[in-house]
Image 1: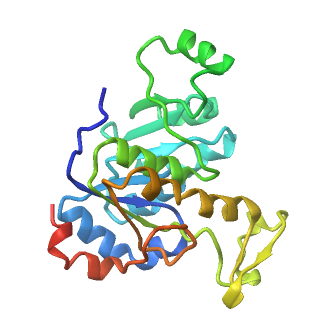
Image 2 (image 1 turned 180 degrees about the vertical axis):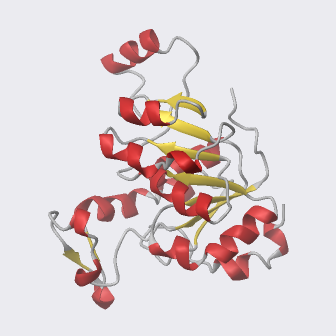
Length: 232
């Protein structure tokens, strides 16, 4: 019922990778200029602390740890969250006083869809999953009608093996050209991002993260903000 409301507008989709923090002044400038801001779960806190309130933040992981991504002191009743129906009850409870919009990341022909329709009788939007939360956040932006979708904080890799975050060190580490490193899930996610420019040629996709997203032309956010094409 809300899809298409941002028709023709530019959107910045924010993951929680290091390029988000290193480009925060440009993210703030994009928000000031009226860009739509969509955040993946862990990106909400650094954005909010910088004074940027995402138009919507997406959470799709079933882990109870996701609730901790949202500091209660930073939450406002006007904050909007798209929450997958499989998100942990702790996440729903943490965001109880905010605006919550449930969605599903499932095959509409599966038996689970019948369960979802029974428990969520209202029309329920469906976003496509792609290994990482940012993939579904991009899907949300394009379904909302944005003409330009730019990602930041979506590296899907680290500059070296030593830089891999502790939470990921139990996974198999893949070495990449130039000394960078990633994990299998991120490597598959990077390939999955090619889906968007291939299936939605009417939308212009670009990546300002310096990451691995396949098929997404690399851009510099600072330079992009000087391009009149990206002016709302």
